[in-house]
Length: 175
Picture (spheres, rainbow, N blue to C red):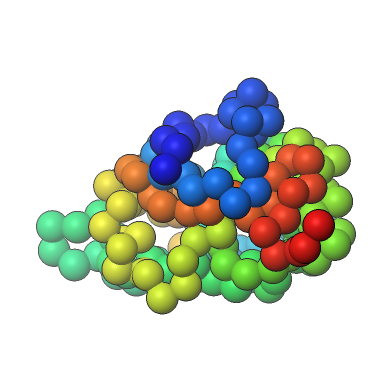
């Protein structure tokens, strides 16, 4: 498995190929449906977001409360298609990576290529494994959304597969 340091650089993104196993380490954001909706509401009103999306990777997840001595509880991936209506807009704002599970729409795939970004597939049902890869957790926006709030995680050796690369390679489609 290839080790990848976050935040992603354009050079690193260029070298990632669909089907390649990776271990991600560094800083990521979390956000699911409610957070994505809130982000777009801010943008629609012309308001500044409480965090910068530029260069970030977002994990589609809602973390469970942390047990004593841990940074986070179980934190498995959410079905990515639920964020497809928001993803192209966020990619246009500089988002570089997304982590989730399952296929993406053709519109998201085109936006990944257009914006020179990447989509990583995480393993569904492996929430405890991912929770153990989270070394630090900080709530950074929308606390009223509880587990759907936006958190910043520091992760180490977070296992994923490159699902859609910046050239349009896609593990979910036969080419």
